[in-house]
Image (tube, rainbow, N blue to C red):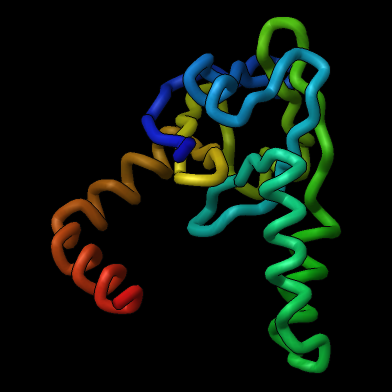
Length: 148
């Protein structure tokens, strides 16, 4: 099932965020279940199930280890990725380094993005929307043009 939706949440003082039920159900994660939190793109963090994290790792391994950009991305991504467990209240704790990387403060937004969840600082997400929404049709054409 593709993950979809936009959900506003608060980050508590212990850097915990509640994963909305539709996203928890979509990733089939129960309390005590594992997720991976890693640097995302465009200033976000990405949350993956073990399965989707493994698929991403396999896809990255297909790149040449002699290419400098492949090595650099792998280092930056995997060195900062962290395995976390969903607590009984459906929350995960974000490591301070990752929270700082994404500029997270009290207000955050979680997005279902097909096979993973993105976690954004609310202000950063609003800025991203303001910049990109007007170009939605162009983005769709570029995305689907590359698929065909």
